[in-house]
Image (cartoon, rainbow, N blue to C red):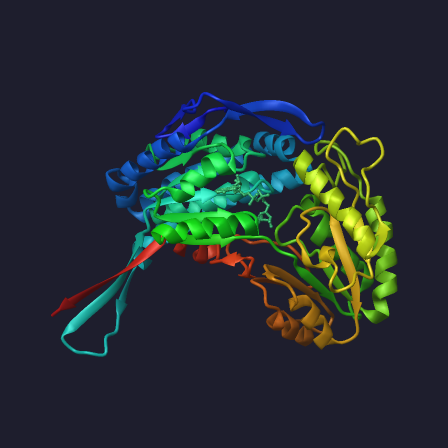
Length: 480
Ligand code: NAD
């Protein structure tokens, strides 16, 4: 495991010489120490990224040339899937099969953006039909410059790839600041990039705390674009900082996503997707469908089945066979979620869960928790908990379900389940959310746009939309 910053093509000690503890949430023990980056390190990293952008080969290479290196990065990640997935389990707590999906997806993101980079050679310029004779005009896409990326801890390597791959495909250079809670796999990108032949300075990784390393990155005048994924309060602070220098910004923030289940949905299918929608990755998922609205005729049946199934979930260490729920990422997240559960007990009816599983007190574990009959104004209904806690409530009519679903300051995900596909499509279009699932919840595809309405963010990642985040568009007009 790496413990140094990756700047200008080399692993280097941080300027302060200080290290911080990386903790395994399954036993709260320190398993690693990593360099504590600060403003000086950010300055060095941005200068390296600037040089690589202004003088280096990367932005001047063809898309096909960049694609070769991106593809090699994807291949290297793929070849190391098991090793990297095990690092994620120790760093984040998630069960191994889910960590394996993450790493496979991470490799897939590099392969996908390699393909898009290759296509840029034919698609980065577009002729424009002008309404006036005597002139010709074209629009040219150019890399935006040095990108600063700040990411959270819930999908550590995957989140990093969703920033790195499109930025590099576009021809940008980057400084990445991973979460202080899960810095381990992000640092591996240094080695992966070097092996693939990425020119020095194109990708720089500075580990450290938000206020110490993240803030100077957002304030740095040498950064042209900021790409942030994390909570609404931090996103809001970053947006205010970016406003000072008019930096281009994209924000992927929190959610409190609804799932509407109509009575014509087979109960088994409904229960399966409700469970997956909230309990995978310990509920630490921005798009988790944490507010479930069930049509009255099947409300009692769903509540009963959910409670039964939740009690069957195997909780434990992420490397243990058959475990579906690992520990939460950290002690502070554990305390936060347990506090939310205490609040929930005052606001609604606890159907099952609500505590620390017996025998697992040494780690940051929380039982899968279901609150039912949750009133509209309850804070557990309105606020993001970011843990394995679901709120369930009934509705009578389609209009009521849509109103309840949209009554949120967030607008990231939303799901609808119904055997009537016309109705499902109607409800899907009525949702005020950026990612909508019909008869499922959570499947995520590299090809499709990802992002939120309202306070859930600005802009879209993944697919071509993710690549477009890293371009400026230039008009070139000629008087013939
Ligand atoms: P967070 O906002 O606390 O931290 C995110 C990152 O920002 C970390 O790297 C942190 O060090 C950094 N940071 C903190 N303060 C900073 C500052 N002042 N300046 C610059 N950087 C700073 O969020 P978190 O707890 O790591 O992640 C959980 C949140 O992320 C949830 O709200 C979740 O919904 C959201 N999230 C959203 C998506 C999405 O795609 N929309 C995906 C994953 C997570």
